[in-house]
Length: 468
Image (tube, rainbow, N blue to C red):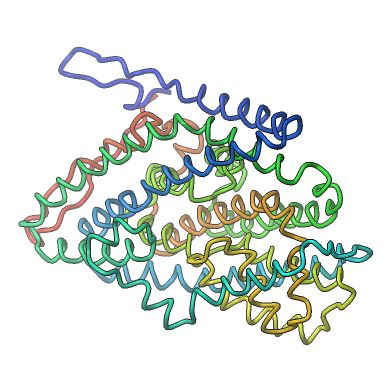
């Protein structure tokens, strides 16, 4: 099978496509992770000092998130015929996020009660006081009204410079609707943003070549700080959490994806394999956000749906964090010999449903939200949060991967419900007939827009044909 991605033609002359050498990048990431573990074990002091490399790489990725989201949403909304489409997508997405987060919290509660991983553990005195510090951080994020107010940026440009996903989303929606209302006269603006998007993704592709350095520093720092003693001491909680996340992704999300979209979760995971490796290496799902947007578009989900679901999902659809919150709460209570009653567990679950939605704006969101929940329900358990701090970084990989998987599945589900997904394209991509362009991360098929003389809007009419 050959596709138009395999060759580019100019008249009768065939121009060979540049070779994709990015597979060497991800091999280098694996080598860097192994090297980071060795450095962290053999020279813990050096490993701690190397943590800045991981921080710098994640910061570089975060630098690209706002322009990627802005371009994607503006192009998506500016090219659709009816503004109601965006509202329908957003409404379905929020309803799904609320329902699935509740399910994830409930699953964590059930597994935590079955495993009781905190039984028999004693609290490390050196960890005392850490819970209060984290709870204060959670309270600094403010209440619901403060959270809503924070979505409105100081200026249109500050939304792109301050790094807030929700502020970028808000401004991009306004600009997209404005261009849409201009009709034909907005076409030049769309083409300019298309060019900007190509530049942004090209810069992102360049930044990703630094992933091995970032992975080496991040892993060396984690192992250097905690060693293996913290991992073995709390192995039951870690394994229980990892197994729960696997069951949630391949069981619940997998069944939903199969019944709603007719897609195998295993094929989707294989398609996103490089993103999973990037997340494991950096312990941050944000490092893969721009690539998720590009890959979901390539998979066949309309740009409008991708632009609305993925960015909002990163703030409101935190399935892995939800599972972690309830399991960790039970763990702390059991470890301190003061288990939560059933009524307290249900009350805490209701609190976490709301609190987890605002967690995205808090640094160290998982631990901070956990501390805030315990302080509001059982203040005497607050200092127990410190016992989890030592292994939280190891658990954060599972949280990040589960959050990422949940947003990938959510994008396909919402696309299916709103009929904004090309099933033939999905099948072609997951079969491997239409590979993702790692060199540009932008499909040429999205660059050609045909003008609709009646409405003044533009419709993407270019599809990449698959020929035998």
